[in-house]
Length: 370
Image 1 (tube, helix red, strand yellow):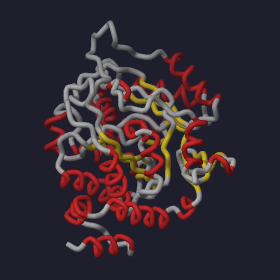
Image 2 (spheres, helix red, strand yellow; image 1 turned 90 degrees about the vertical axis):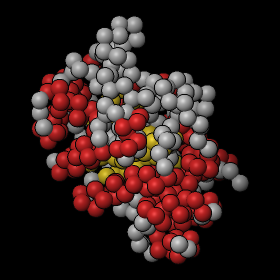
Image 3 (cartoon, one colour; image 1 turned 135 degrees about the vertical axis):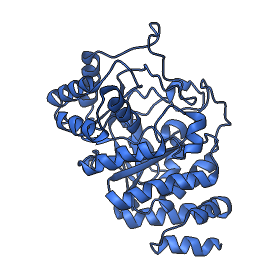
Image 4 (cartoon, one colour; image 1 turned 180 degrees about the horizontal axis):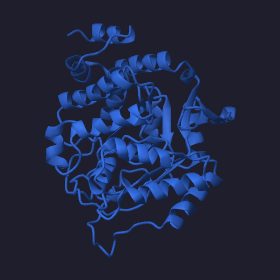
């Protein structure tokens, strides 16, 4: 397969096959991949030539009890762990959302382990009260694996769980729990977690009942390059059916403090993956950079490798941070996100979950790198 012809097909709107995607990853020059991915981004998001968006949001982990025992996770504690296990009180959760609102935040992501003591009534009550107290905040919460857990514990169908949560105030679903959407890999790293068909069943059903969602990838779990392409293809095939995915976010696996010791991924690999995400996912509009695992500098470069969005500032990110890896970036404030975007020469633009503009921050000329 000829690299130039594959890239030309992508630029003309043609769909790159799994085999062609693997060839691009292995053989295309990094700068060439970045150029094409950036051009595809401009086709979908013309305004990103001059601006990059970001979200002011907060992750709140309501419980770290979990029975799924994923080998890649350093966050969970077994049910019954009295020393380090917890279930946050509602008041603790409300206080954290108040802090988010105080800095102009618009989205909360409630996520937690698969706690066998929590059924649909807990999630309904929490969602309903969050929406009642903070009607202006978008509740982007509960991953596919959490939804499957709720259904199992509560004896309900996936559709019933989603309908009840939507009625309580849930606005959309995150893409968490995807890791690598190939059952061979999942059987090795998380055999008790959702299978590929279950993950996509949750998102398909969410889209059918009127809930948008996002997609994710955690690469570096021992998968092959071809399996990464299969992951992309699963998302774009469902997007062909439903159009329900707003955005995609890839990031690398950090194995420190987990039961899996894997080599740390490189920056050039991340840039290849962010570019391939834009090229392969031809029907998903938005692509987010991943500063938590990749750091702010790579995230800045990602904004010229196909990403149009810096992502959320993720106040109090705990799941990836639980690895305590030295290479992780400790956190980004709203002010730092504005500075990092301005340094790329683009206009920092705060958005909400719907990618509607909340505020534009025009930087001082001196803030722009030359």
